[in-house]
Amino acid sequence: MKKIDEMRGLVNSNGPSWGAIDPESAARMVLQNRFPTGLDIAKYTAKIMRADMEAYDADPANYTQSLGCWHGFIAQQKMISIKKHFGSTKQRYLYLSGWMVAALRSEFGPLPDQSMHEKTSVPALIEELYTFLKQADARELGGLFRELDAARANGDAVEAKRLENAIDNYETHVVPIIADIDAGFGNAEATYLLAKKMIEAGACALQIENQVSDEKQCGHQDGKVTVPHEDFIQKIRACRHAFLEMGVDDGVIVARTDSLGAGLTKQIAFSKEPGDLGDQYNAFLDCDEVDPANITNGQVFISRDGKLMAPKRLPSNLYQFRAGTGEDRCVLDCITSLQNGADLLWIETEKPHVEQIAGMVDRVREVIPNAKLVYNNSPSFNWTLNFRQQVYDAWVEAGKDVSAYDRDKLMSVDYDTTDLAIEADEKIRTFQADASKRAGIFHHLITLPTYHTAALSTDNLAKEYFGDQAMLGYVKGVQREEIRQGIACVKHQNMAGSDIGDDHKEYFAGEAALKAGGKDNTMNQFEAA
Image (cartoon, rainbow, N blue to C red; front, side, top):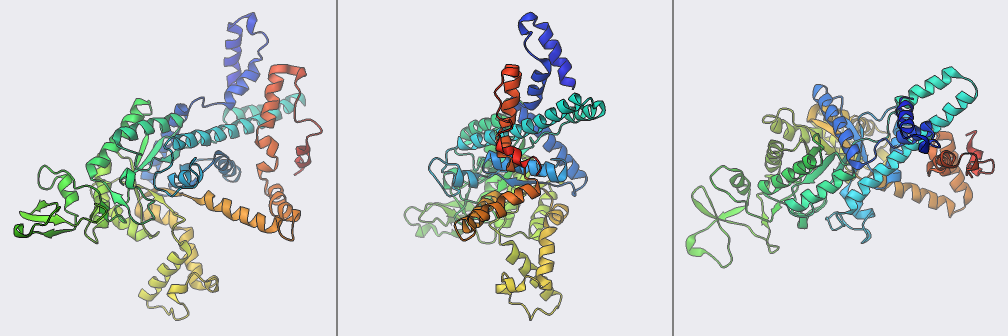
């Protein structure tokens, strides 16, 4: 291994006092901890993400994907699975969902996605995710080291050389993360401070949205309140300054607009002259022309085309936008964000419809030709019903007979084997590739998948174990499948680091090491699995 020679030189240069240090053992530990700090991770993964963005610009078939993970163990198992099934982590990322931080990681207990959770819980989760991914590296490399020792002991020089090459060219489980900073948890200064903590923890990409921090709602809930463009641009600048200060020059900013579904604003934007950004924002306000003779108490006014206008203000003290302006506001948000330092866009939609997304992206690309999106393949969408209805509507438009279908009841299991349902499932299967080609989507993610998988698998186990199946419910539904599918966690002691600890004991104590992996370790029952 290349690292051994470096470590041997270091040990020898320190003279007799370092005589008890084995250079190869030390080199192995260095290789098992390739990223000592979160900043090392952020710099490494930012370059990966930038290269992937260039590859996508050259060919939209090179889109990237991620799943949201709410615990380090979930992220670890996801990346182990990806390496096992696909041989590489290329173009696969992590996503950190603010929704799942609020619902699962707050000290207050489960919370809605309204930025009420502790802001420090976000960088803490980033650090946790990467701690588990680094441990996955250490575990897998430890297995290669053991194989190398066995090959050397057996005098198999060819196998030893193969393993040395595998170690020297090892692909890490550490991948880019797109981390949700919500609306910044305060003003631009607060956004900057939190961004630094997230970058220190390892985040190479920050996703920030244009809602009011103290009025923030999940993108799939009602009552969303947006801010004027200049307010949002200040937070984009704050994130960029944080990246530059921390030395992550390639850091990525994802600007999310909720304007498509947000009909409210808290502020009337400041405007210096007609047509400036503030004036464009205010032009979307729902206003009534006012007769100066009929001014009432507490009214607020703006001038528009030489007329005195009163924006409609709700009892909540919020102003509302004109109906039907969401798409125009969304497009303007996207253009101004990219013109002021954002790298990627996130358009939160109410349904997964390729042409709806593409229609907005086409307009953005008239101004920013290489604009591209991160898109939420949200569990808040009823994918089955949405796509069956899309196929139904396309069939109606094409003049096909749909008399066998009830559009409002297409979710029914009765339709599962029909031609309509089969066509809809194929559209779901190809949605990511189709949308990346047609609608400029560089990165597809599912925000909350592991929230739902944890609930589903736990329900299935509880139903079996506490029912008539008892222990067979666990053995048949979990352990037997772990063994047969080669799930690494079946050896849970190894996954938790027992073998890594044994290696360290041997490095530190030699023959005196009291190791846990001896003949009486019950994990040996899975050796033949």
